[in-house]
Image 1 (cartoon, helix red, strand yellow):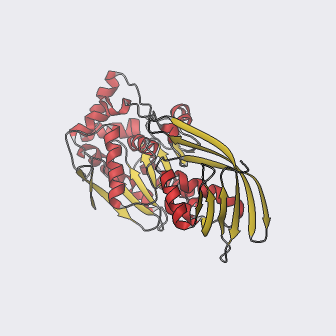
Image 2 (cartoon, helix red, strand yellow):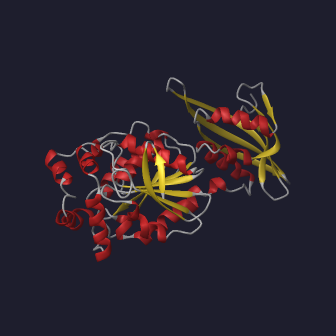
Image 3 (cartoon, helix red, strand yellow):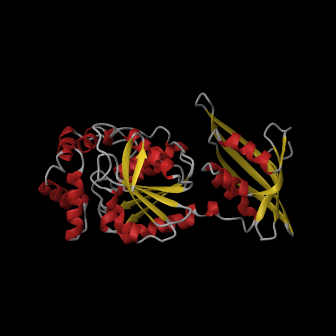
Length: 388
C-alpha cells in the first residue's frame, strides 16, 4: 500500500487485524520485506505494518532527508496517516535508532518499543576508512555478498533469502547508501531518551559484529528507562532473517506481557492504578476514561475544584495530557469491602513546562473504587491530594 507522509509517498506492507499494531522499521540496506518471515510467525490478531524507509524499496527516493530526525518525522506522519490509535514500534539497526528518537518524543498511541540490534541513539564514532568501506558495501552484488558473509550474518541464509538481501541492498538510492555511513550513524539523537515512557525490549544477536551484545549493554540499555534485554543465540546482525521464528516469539511475548495490560479492564482493585498509569503515559484518553465510573468525582490538583461526571473528568484529563505527563502510582494499601475498595497511593508525576523545564510533583492519594455488574473495578472517587 502507499502512504502520503511528510511530503513523500512511502510503501508499506499491511497485514493482520487487531486493536494493537506493530510498526516495523528496517536496517540500512533492508526493506519492508526484511520482516516478512517475522510477520508470518506472529499472531493473526495483531496488525503488522512494515515500512520502506525513504530511499529504499518502493518508497520515494528524494535527494535528501536521510538524517534520523527526518526519518522519524516520516514514520510519525505515516502512523498519523494510517490512523493508528495504539501501536508498538519495532526497529532493527538503523530502524532502531529512528524508533528511539521517535519514542523519545512520546507520540500519542505508542504502547511499547522493541529494538532489534539497534544502532545506539548516541551515535557511533567510526574512522574514515571504515565509513568509506561501509559506503561501498552495497555497490555491487559481490560486495554485498562479502558483507553478508563477513559482517552481517552468522547463520547461512537460504539462496532465496540471500538473493533478496542483495537485491534490497543494491536497490537503495545512492543518497541513502551514502548518508548513513558518513553522517547518520554518528548523529547523537539521545537527548530526550529519558522521556521514553513505554515498556522497552532490546533484542541482540549473540555473534553480532555490528551492534554487539556488549555495546547494547553499555550504551543502549542504560539510556532507556526500564528497558530489558534478551539475546538470541547463534545469530549475527540480521536477526529478522537469521532467526525470524525466535524473534517473532520474543516480540509476541513482549506484547502479551508488557503492552496488552493497558487495554484490559481491572479485575482487582489494586490493578486500577497500573492501568491508569499506562493509559495516561501513552496519551490514551479513552483508556483513561474507561477506568472511571460514569458518575465519578475527582478533586483536582488545586485542592478546591471538584470535577463531577464523565464530561468534566474528560475535559480535565485532556488538559492534563496536553503536557504529556509521566505518572507512577505505587499502591501502599488496599482495603476492600464487598464491591467497594479504598486505595492509598504514593504518586509521582513528571511534566515539561512551556519553557522545556521538567516539573516533578509527588503526593499521597486516596481513591475509592467500585466493582460494577460485570465484575470490573472502576474509580468512583479520586482524591490525588489525599488528606491535604
